[in-house]
Amino acid sequence: MSEQVDKPGQSQLNTNDECWARDLISKVAFAALVEQRRSRRWGILFKFLFLIYLLAVLLIAYGPFDSDKTVLGKRHTALVSVDGLIASGAVANAENIIAGLRAAFEDDKTAGIILRINSPGGSPVQAGEMYDEILRLRKTYPNTPVYAVASDVCASGGYYVAAAAQKIFANKASIIGSIGVRADGFGFVDAMEKLGIERRLYTAGENKAFLDPFTPQQPKDVSHLQSMLGDIHQQFIAAVREGRGERLHETPELFSGLVWTGAKSVELGLIDELADVRQVAEKVIGAKTVVDYTRRPRLIERIFQSAEASVQQALIRTLGLDNTTPLR
Image (cartoon, rainbow, N blue to C red; front, side, top):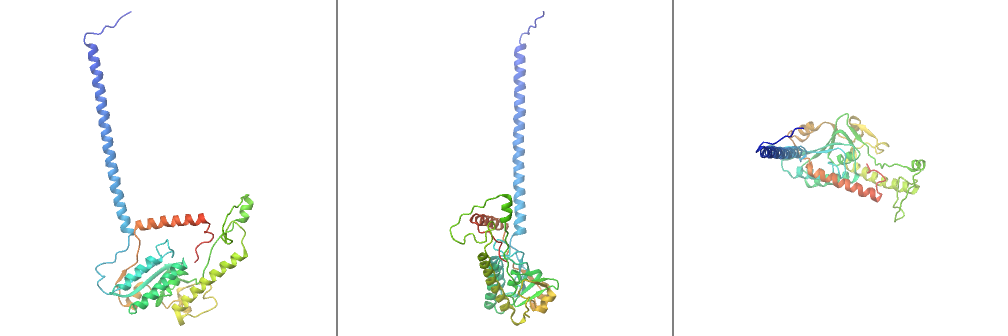
């Protein structure tokens, strides 16, 4: 049996070595931690800078179109575009379009205004507000003509707006018309019976459950809805007749909701001629320089509008008011 005997000072040496090793490991670990924190800070900084850059690009891309300042002092044709669905929560809402039109009319260098429309329609309220404002502006600025130019589609609410212009132009293949009103809905009564779902609805007011899709359809509800649609349809027809006047060649199908090509629409008096924006600016207005006055909300405005629309839709669903889609 052997015994190990430490030499004098060896224990102290071992202790010193252990302390030195611990200190070294602590320093290395601390240095690594500091470097990690530094890298994390730089990473956060770069991400933040990239986010700012991205927001700047989006704000430029989706902000309101700034007209070319070099031509605003010259005689020009003003352009206001109505693109897409006409609705309060959409870009093509009455507030945006009217703001662009007012700016165009108020500019004393505006030789004429082109209302470029590419819309399948939407809210009769929004379209009606645009229509009324165009007529008002025409009276206020009688020396500034306003023309509508249809692009791919100028139907329903889109045509409602166009009818307020002095003349309407389109491409031979443009889709024109759809002078009618519709309301959409669904019925789930049979599906609920098959699935064994019980409908529980509590209301205060005899007609609060008007056209509820989960209960059997009531003839009086349908009759009331048809009456509403008929009233709005007559408002639409009156606006078209007022705007187009004797140019209309009325037929039994003209106000039935049908659509026609641009070429056929000339024959029906729904439009005046076949021409595009450039041709109208150069040959009709006589100012080939076109300046865009369309008001496009900035990105932050669009975000808030979307959020507001979402809240409104949630409230509508909560109150049970979403039984039909918006009238078109």
